[in-house]
Amino acid sequence: MRRTNGELILFWTLPAAAIIWISAFFLFPGFIPPMSPTMSANQVAEFYRDPQNLPRIRYSMILFNWFCVCLIPILMLIVMQMRRMALRTPILAYCMLACAAGGPVIFLLADLFWLLAAFRPERAPELTQMFNDLAWVTFTVQVPYLIMQSLLIALAIYWDRQPHKVFKPWVAYFNLAIAAALAPAAFTGLALHGVMAWDGLLPFWVKNIAIGLWIIVMGLVLGQAIRHQRAEEPV
Amino acid sequence: MNGRRELWFAWWTTVVFYQLFGVVFFVLTRTQPPPDPGWDASRVAQWFHDHHFGLLVGFGIMFLITGMTAPQNALIAYSMRRMSVSRAFGYSYLVLYSLSAIPGMLLMCIVLTVGAMRPDRDPELTSWLYDFAFLSFVGTMGVFLIGSLVWMLAILIDKNGVFPKWFGYLNLCNALTEVVVSPAWIFKHGVLAWNGLIAWWIDMVVFGIYTGVFLMQLRKMIQREDFGDGPLPDSAPDQESVPSTMASSAS
Image (cartoon, rainbow over all chains, first blue to last red; front, side):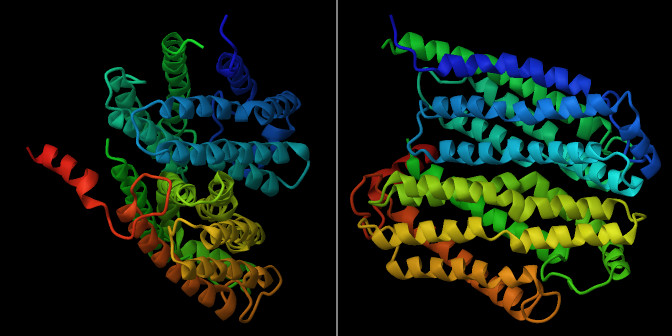
């Protein structure tokens, strides 16, 4: 019987975390539909003061606070697969480590701003609106490390010239497409209305669906790569 | 397999990042040199009004490209991996500098974006956002301080000759700028304020020189790299890997 190295345990935390993320996403009343940046300070304050909303805001954001960092062990499993690629130096793996330290923390900051807004909803509406703005802008522009991660994975796959590549070439193109889909969200500050606003088509729907899709697809190919690795290297 | 191209990827990404960083902070957003910490709320609101599009476009670019700091931190961590010192040095630097980007830069970009996108906000709140932004940017000190000292110590005790020892002491100069800037948390006017002669101008000149020098030093390291673990050769081992790939791509 082979020894456990724990990678499969880390891997199977992904579906569990994904279920929690999806539940928290639908639990937060500000996501379906996304809150508009054109709401007045009074409307934003009403949203937080509504007894229907307040517990759901707090519980969903506490869930995200606990579990948004669950992506880090999965990113580390991707780093472990990058170390199996035909690369001469650990530079790309180091780059992934650097991105993993940044990405989830930005989401954590947004989470803190939402929880702060919900902590004292009786505060002056302008203050609640400011915390709500900080939360939404931070949440929407959290793309820089996610973009870089996707580009790094694509580059690593391109440079992985060996008969049995760790990830198939289509995974590289998939990651490039995800990077492109995430890019417009960076410029959400420019618009309070329309497709570029933080509740608009590109920064909200396209970005968040791209993140969800990336997690599902990378989860599947990662699981496959770990299975191949275990078949090739019996302990 | 050409390992050098992996290092050049990280080096060129760093060079391009600093070009874009300069354009965004000095030209588009006009946040460097920084505006005055002594302004009253209405003057601050006026500043946001005057720089509305520059701030939103410029920081949009930063949200797009901040990931480019990862290859820089990776390459510097790699330089310590190539030294005779423990791997703990490179890993420390990687973690310190990777987390530094969030309080030390991204927070400012986020907060000034929030300030700029709602010009009708109460000027008192806008003024609080202004303080938050500039103080988090100049006032995030420890990660850069300790990070530079880790790199300095690694260079000074390294036996593989990856960098000249004087460059180790230049790291100390960079670390000291993080000490010198600390009064910016206290003073609103004069040389020690966040836009002052000492806290900004001298620090920026040192940081500029430091950045230029470390880019050149990393470039030299990549040229000399032989992918061994002993002393780094003085000159580039050109005949090894570069011409063979160039020949094969040319044919």
